[in-house]
Length: 121
Image 1 (cartoon, helix red, strand yellow):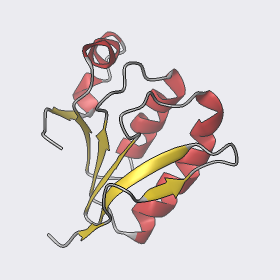
Image 2 (image 1 turned 90 degrees about the vertical axis):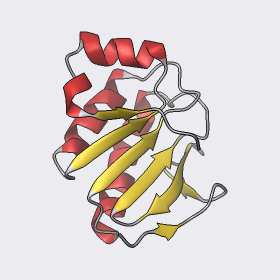
Image 3 (image 1 turned 45 degrees about the vertical axis):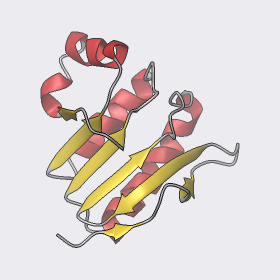
Image 4 (image 1 turned 90 degrees about the horizontal axis):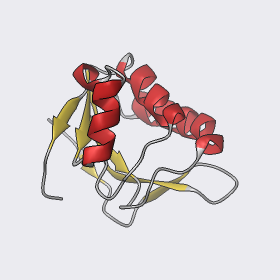
């Protein structure tokens, strides 16, 4: 599996308001996250969708992993985005989701759509 490491300091600007989605690695396994901060509000979701779609296409991503470390809550729009991205790749992995995020995934019956992993980053 050939992956291109981007590094912890790399960032993909997402919206005009300065919100940033961190891109840690690109390639067949693409890893993105929010640098240990809560997921930004709903107004950013459309921008995230556009940028992530472009990222997936450019790097022929097969597995998309979201680092959820430090994310306490996930807005419903982000849950919808994760679900729609699941249709574009063979697998979506969620790294280190909080107990609250896991509970929401269970309550919404979305948990089976994702591979949930505890990893050391």
